[in-house]
Length: 291
Image 1 (spheres, rainbow, N blue to C red):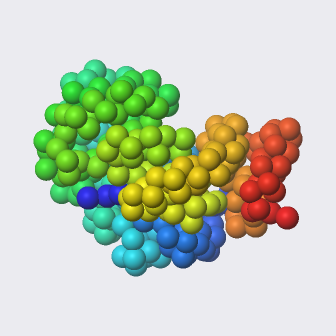
Image 2 (image 1 turned 30 degrees about the vertical axis):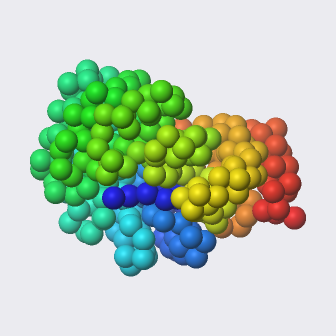
Image 3 (image 1 turned 180 degrees about the horizontal axis):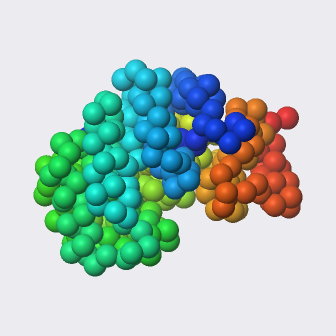
């Protein structure tokens, strides 16, 4: 159902508040450059430090700005099933095309607990759901067998996979139906995951180079593997630079350097170290993003 180059969009702030004007500008920039979908309120959108009111507002702004030109897949994950249901209901009611739900973090549920969590939300809200498996942040791993069980639930339509483990991804693809969308959760692994049957990416660096990420995914889908490989290695230095510190610190710094947002975060996230800021600017200069 969902595929292509989808951006996990940042949440711009100004004087401590959500900057609606800049958010709308970023959405236009994405759509103009070929992005296939927008994910507000993901990890890259600093969802963990948004109030519930702000979380709802960012999703509403995104849906209004996109105006159905591409799918909006709202981040609605939580380590509380009741809270995830509330967030997901709101996203569905205001018109999101789907939701992205991170596997419950910190409380480290069993595989059965993970399954029951997503099942409960899916039964409560009839919206397409993409679970998000990112063990490095959640402290637990959604095993392929669990994903296969979830894929049998009608409105669980795919998974965002950020294990970086192609064996894990291949096992998911082998156990799920062909219409189940496996999306890369890491910019580094988009091309390898598509090579084994994935359908695209929910990307961080698409915030700054949406046209190149979209072109790489399109080239692969058109059978032009050489061009897809060229774009993969063209973007490689940016992929490394945008994870030089915890995401979304570097990518928000890059957008600020490009003049697209203010250089602002919510604690406990803070600006890049001076050394890493210099490294990021060097890579961006070499890429041609700044003079």
